[in-house]
Length: 149
Image (cartoon, rainbow, N blue to C red; front, side, top):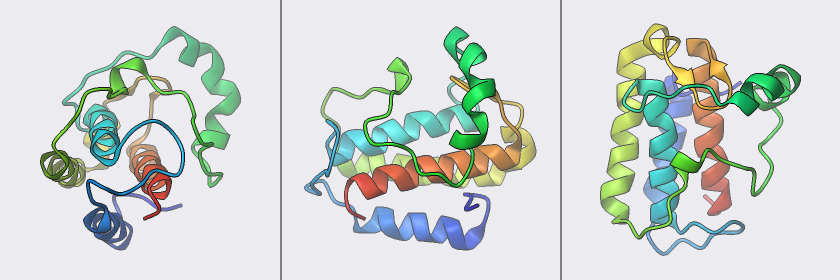
């Protein structure tokens, strides 16, 4: 499974983010490119500890049944639900938001898997550092595919 904690996987994500631009057309969903990178950054902030979260009640109930499918190789579905705090409806400055996401990727890696394992995911609750790296890679990859990169 690909992970942000692997240099080659991380380099691939960084390269793909570099080809994304403010005018990139989405293939599904409602967000523009700037909103999408902001959305990804907000999610990543939970793994770095910049956005502390508590596990949603619904997540506590459903996670045991879907954990392996979400954290596994199976791609995310298009238009999947998201935590309301990660929804971005206002306009954003693309270059600023992309750099913020790149910086957060670097911070997650610098902090390491042990630090990530101390954070709580908004839906899945406690994750191992390995799971954080894989889930955040999968999440960013999903949204880059949304914009054809």
